[in-house]
Image (cartoon, rainbow, N blue to C red; front, side):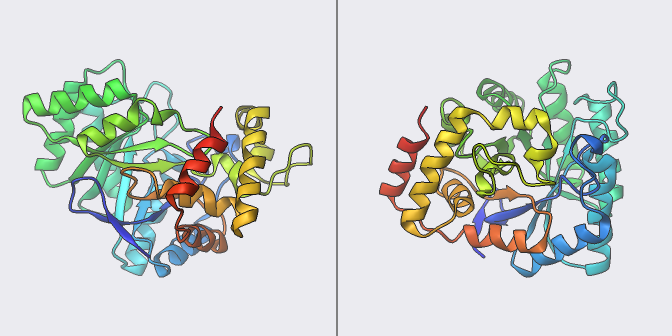
Length: 322
């Protein structure tokens, strides 16, 4: 396993991180995404990841209604294995639509809940999960700054912010002498490259780390789906109509088919391309990859080994252009 420095921090993260979003079901309404892994399955996934060299687990307070953090905490207590943890704040743990946001009071309260469930004294990276239009960014950043100075958080980061929001946050922190975001966690894949246009230049300019999530586009880049064929039973795009409507478009099918031909000529799988390509993109420190079985963890890790050439990357740009 190769490890990379995360932005300008002192953290060295494995190129592949384990996404723990499905532990106990996603969010407080797991019926929307299936029930997710039970605790025993979650333990087997974390065991497989750690044994393969993964040192980075990513979760959020809201995942599984707090179960994801709780199960990670139990695993850490039982196994005693050193890993880097990132978790997030914004959504409600108990599923209350009014209990969300990034106000000072809420951040301080939610961080204590995460520390308790994870059974740790400090979070390595604490992320704002969503932008909060109802709370001034200065209030959010002052609260996060206090957590760093209290020793409860090592670094702060953000997720799903637009380019202008990242610039605003970095300017505010610099102007007020507060801790700055060190990393952006964003939806990014061969089929979803919107951040290349505006956010990527910001990430590069500020020297931020980039951690892509949903690298397989909800499974469409695994190679198990075929245009016009029945969808695999139990698969994400088979069980979630909204996701299927979003991803199973004519444009995406065409791109997938072109990429599969690219892979076939080179003796690699579509999954290997999806993850390997991300690891060749600017500022990417680690790719968050979820799994439901230990062998999927191993496949995700093997995918990181494909060394794409500059010519390969240029050809992929052409194949994924609209």
